[in-house]
Length: 245
Ligand code: SF4
Ligand code: FES
Image (cartoon, rainbow, N blue to C red; front, side, top):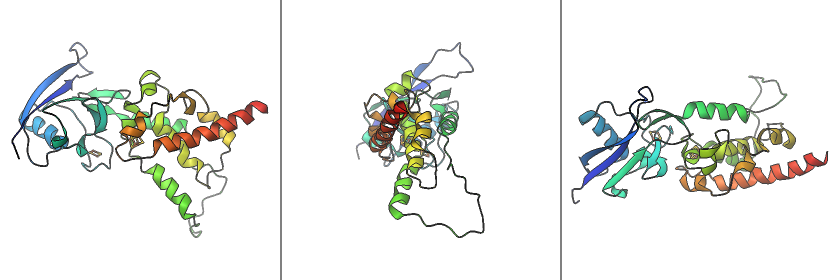
């Protein structure tokens, strides 16, 4: 392997010190075999600047905490290898979410708000009986739910979404995917009309302008384009019927 000197231009900003303007700070280090951005950022913090802020928990594309803009594209830093990057790389925090400092953003508040707004729990009149035997679910339905639940809440679909960047209340692809997850769940007794009340509007499924960056950017391959088409179809017909009532 030919040794490469890599340059990283990293956004520095501390919201607690607003008098210091956001700026790009340049760092240099020598590439190593199998190096990921997780290794890069930890090396930079340990060896060059202990104040550098970023988030990692699992290092394995599971926790969703390391989403950032890598040369303008939202992705997980832990799964990004330096061998796939040019000599100079720019790292910025994901937009839309509250900036905590440098590359660290608070996705948790956004996702909790979206969960409440989409009422992300099974709506049923049945009383939970812990002694009752488990009910079987059709395999195909269980797989559809699993597909939606693969979302790791990294926020890459939101950070790269043109609508989410200009409309703070837009639920985005992650929100639409969440709604789809409950729509296919036979235990959830919500009617289409009730779903329509929640997402049949411009901050919901009709706010999407169809650029589909979400689908391109999802690092775990949740089928966001299909989920959007599914929910939109249901809400369009519900809306049509709703107008008639
Ligand atoms: Fe991340 Fe994909 Fe979930 Fe969006 S749908 S938050 S890109 S895992
Ligand atoms: Fe968990 Fe990257 S550190 S997804």
